[in-house]
Length: 149
Image (cartoon, rainbow, N blue to C red; front, side, top):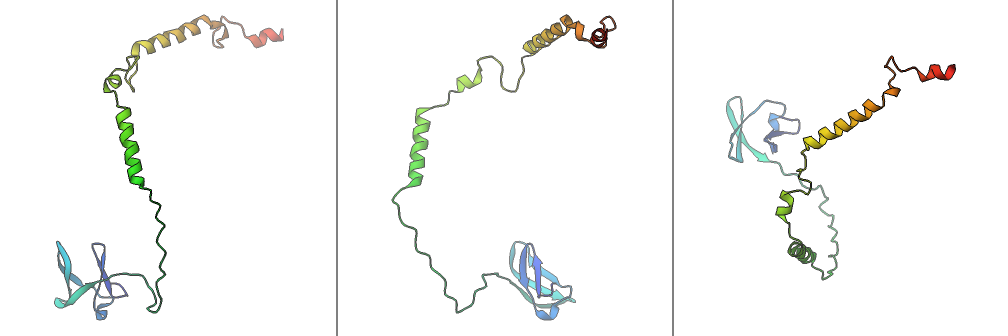
């Protein structure tokens, strides 16, 4: 129990008798109906817990300020959105047959393995014909040494 005389149960705050502040109390309740909660201390029933309702803290003499109502424009935005949506659906239907077969035959997220293999072979051919720039090849003289002599 807190210093303010409240207990918390399932996210709700309840007020109990101030004489129980700082003591460990037992709450007896129906889990399907949290409106009636009994408070027990040392095996004795000491009353019911009252739900704490937190409201705005306003001085009783303060008068609420009333805001003027918003001006009426006469425009029904929901009807405009509904009309635009309906005309869009009527004019442009989804062609599911075109979605099922992509033009290149490859579905999104898939890779054409034969095309990928051809690309790898082309890259290997380019590297095979350009052996003069390989610095690890012992048969190819260093260009730096050629430039020095």
